[in-house]
Every structure is written in structure tokens, then in C-alpha cells.
Length: 347
Image (tube, rainbow, N blue to C red):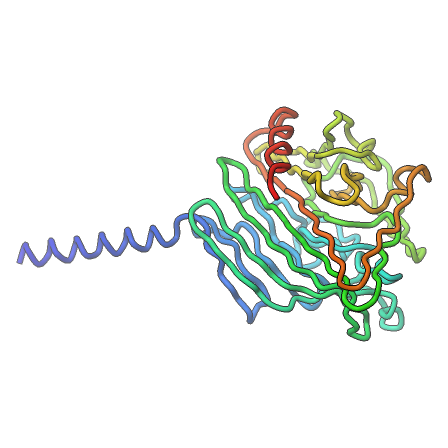
């Protein structure tokens, strides 16, 4: 009897260890019925690749720190008390642009009136090409298309997300190849683009004055002052520029620091030397939009530069960016310079 009990205990223990091994490190879980791929680490959701019809482009949402603190705004996907409800097209982490052959991909959302939707473009998920996960590393490669309202394809996109855990760093490297389909594609020199994250309320910058933001179609979005004590954000770029002054500066990296749930948090973005427009301009707003735009030269330089970036049919460009989500401390200039140097070595 003792032998049988011991055998059962051993089998249970072996089974437990086997299950634990399966849930340690990264796993990528496809959920086609929900139109998302969950990025799990140690059996907890770090982010998900989401291609909801209502969002008009694929996104990473939500995005959390290694220890489970959500750094992205919930609206309009999830309702979170106290959050802003401006700019419904700001969702998670995304990449798109305000003027592609005259179509606005950036501002598209369900808030656009039906009679105006022909002026907007949509990025549509096509398929998961590959996914790999194990230990502290994972990768997800997807195919999407940039389309007009009549479903004409302007661009074919292939993106690989590389997910890495290093200590308290959740690192997301994005490598995106954009290929013009059968007609020239012009990215007009405009303000809104290209890679962005909309952060949670606590990581916004404190503000005392309301602001009004106007898109290229003259549509105004009013943003009230922050008005709460728990808003703690601060931008710092690679040249040491801080706060609202970061907007329209160039730099190889930029960070947003703040506190949430009693933890110091840093979100960092890093440009890659092979990218068009390197070093990028920073389109960083105090109300929670943290973005980089390598193509909007004229508005950021006040007319000193201009770039209408064009891809001829079947011509491609590849963009590489790194996002670091760090918790438990504030990343220093030395740490970010090292991140940028290491990222620059990647091909």
C-alpha cells in the first residue's frame, strides 16, 4: 500500500513539474474567435496582438510591466474610472500615419461619420505567419494590408514583434516592412504618426491648462487639464530635454517616467539608425500620447525641413523600433544609451 501511495505522489509531483515547466516563460496563444494573440509570460498576460474590426488597425493591448502594472489607457476598449475619453483612435501600441495617398490612417475610428469614411484608411490583419516562444524570448510575425475604403490595397505590411524579458524590462522590438502594392504611395509630410503608445492616466504629465488639438481636417479635440495628484509623468529625451519641450525635438531615444501603484515606471522608445528620418522627431504630448514621427519634418522643424516620403510600386522600406517597459526604478541616461547602442547592432 505504501508503495502505491508513494508512486501516486511521485506521479503527481512529476505532473506538477511538467505543468510548471509549460507555463514558465513566454507562450503565444492564438484566439481567432476574439481576434487576438495573447502574449503570456509565466502564465500572466503581458500584452496581446489585437486586430479588432472596431479599432481600424492592429494594436498591442493592453501592455503591462513584468510585475503586472498596466501602462496603457483602457479607453475605448475597456472602461477605467478616471481615465480621459479623448482621441478614440489612440489605442495601446500602434503604427500608422496621418496621410498616405491623402488618406488618414491615424485618426480613423468608429467615431468617424459614415459620410466621411472615404477619407480614411484601414489596416487589416491578414494572417499570423509564424510564432515562436520559449524562456525569456518570443516572436510573432504577421501580415497586414493598408487599404482604402473601397478595399484597394495601397501597402502590404509584414511585421515581426520580438518580445524579451530582462530582469524588470519588458522589451518589444518591432520590425515592420512596408511594400507599395501597384501604385506609388506617398507619405505626406504631416504631424500625426508613426509609432505610438497611449499611456494610462497616472503616466500623463501634470497640467494646469486645457488644450485644443486640431487634425488636418480641422477637427478639434479638447483636452482638459490633468487636475489630479496621481498624474506623475515626465518626458526626457536623449539630449536631456524635458517635459513639454520634448515635443518636436530629435533624438535617438526618449523616455516617459512616472509612478503607478507605488512603483516607479519608465517607458522608453528607441530609434534605429537604419530607419528613414533617423534620428526621429518626438511627437510626445503631456496628456498621454507618446509617439515618434520620422516623416513629419516640416511641422516639427518649423519649415526648415521637408519630406514627402514615397514608395514606388513594389518598393519597400523597413522600420525598426524598440519599446522598453520598465518597473521598480527610473531608467538612467546611461542605461538608455546602452539600450540604444545594443539595438543599433541589430539588423
